[in-house]
View 1 (spheres, one colour):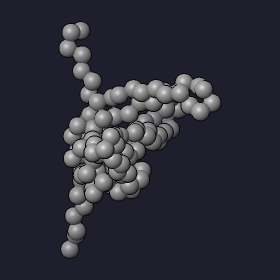
View 2 (cartoon, rainbow, N blue to C red; view 1 turned 90 degrees about the vertical axis):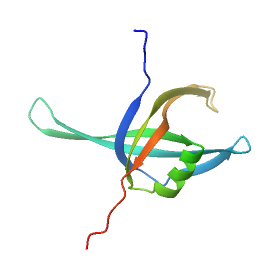
View 3 (cartoon, rainbow, N blue to C red; view 1 turned 30 degrees about the horizontal axis):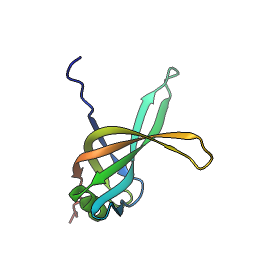
Length: 114
């Protein structure tokens, strides 16, 4: 297993407008949560619908694009990589998070119908 790849491809909808921040003086960062819907039939044959939420992080020029183009409900696709983080909460407990660092974005533009 020499060639291990950390790659994620998702398509879904933004749960909110992308939020842009400047960190470290001049680095731009944008964050948004993406909802991805799944449906399947359970053992009883009933349709089950689930929504999975993913935390996305955009850096640099991609952060600018996210701020301009990604609004609540926007349908888009991304390709990126998983990144795990940990921190200590105010109560002293250790917390763990997983985010997707976005490397490619494809935004579905809505087209007007005459």
